[in-house]
Length: 308
Ligand SMILES: C[S@@+](CC[C@H](N)C(=O)[O-])C[C@H]1O[C@@H](n2cnc3c(N)ncnc32)[C@H](O)[C@@H]1O
Image 1 (cartoon, rainbow, N blue to C red):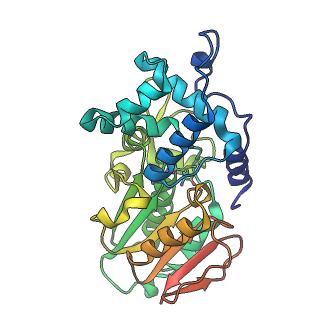
Image 2: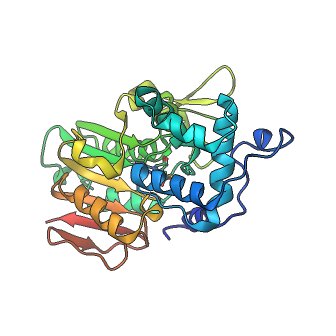
């Protein structure tokens, strides 16, 4: 696992003991309906088919709780009826888009993996003015499984800060993608509470955020404009219009897939990388893997590759 938090997420995925996503809905309103083995398998298959994630047996209560919360919001009391709703044409698609947010883990934070950010700075960005080879410097980055935006904004701040200090002209464009429309909407708004920005050093907080009247912080428009949020399912990447990227970052997402699917997804990323570009994964998320077009980068506490 890449970090202690990733390990936690992994354990959360495996454990049966995590809290309901919405404690209010999970208490005092009566029990959720029973889910028998056949129904459980039906839902596990659906989730795997549509997200790539296969829930293990010990995650039944996670499924029941989170499905139950959404069903309650809609007034459904039968898993089967709700399952049928999800298969009913356009309405089913719209509802699936909402449900997926309830069934995926969005744990994230600003500057979550600082070593990966340091690697981008050290192994990709020019470190001295005389290393700048183009004017303006152009960098296209893709943050895959970006959740509510903390990862792409962290990268945006780090790159912006570095290149401005270097005094060079640059164009920075970041694509931030996730399967969850709710997560994408939150990222696009770029509004975070005090606790969520606590990892950000005061200099960056002042430079990259403005305080709203309610005491929350919003990423400044100049930085928000650099990050383009899109809904994208990594298991359907053949449909993506995303072009050639200089850096692709995918952390704390692959852990939810089996090995074969991880390899498939990461091999697809390679096709979107420019020569010399970087692929940055979460440490431990794809061990003992190599690709003929990539060379492994040696940088402490990271898992990263350069396109040859
Ligand atoms: C644990 S978060 C990781 C966030 C961020 N990358 C980080 O490291 O802090 C995993 C994200 O992956 C997204 N996700 C899950 N399955 C996905 C899929 N098939 N395609 C795209 N995103 C997916 C979830 O919605 C969630 O926001």
